[in-house]
Image 1 (cartoon, rainbow, N blue to C red):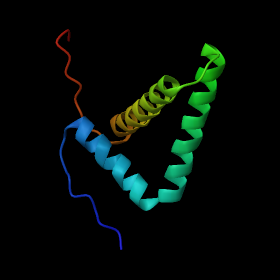
Image 2: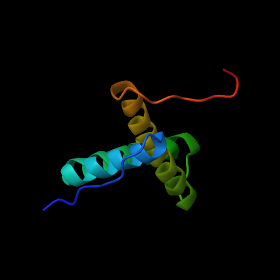
Image 3: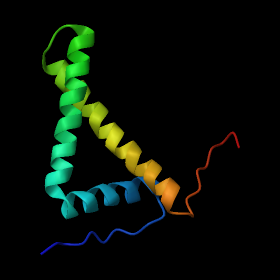
Length: 91
């Protein structure tokens, strides 16, 4: 039995987190494998670039992967769900 996430808003970050949670609930194995593979790829790139390992490499890789997943969810929502407005003081 799947518990549905009941958050509905027109606030892009909240909807992006809701989308990530729904994907993780519907496809937990696929989502887990995708996150682990992307985390491993970022760790390998950072180790090769900085030529050392340690906790800082893993923390930075975790941040990059989390940010990439969140940014991808935001871009997906912007592209597929009309009605979001990006407010910027310069426009």
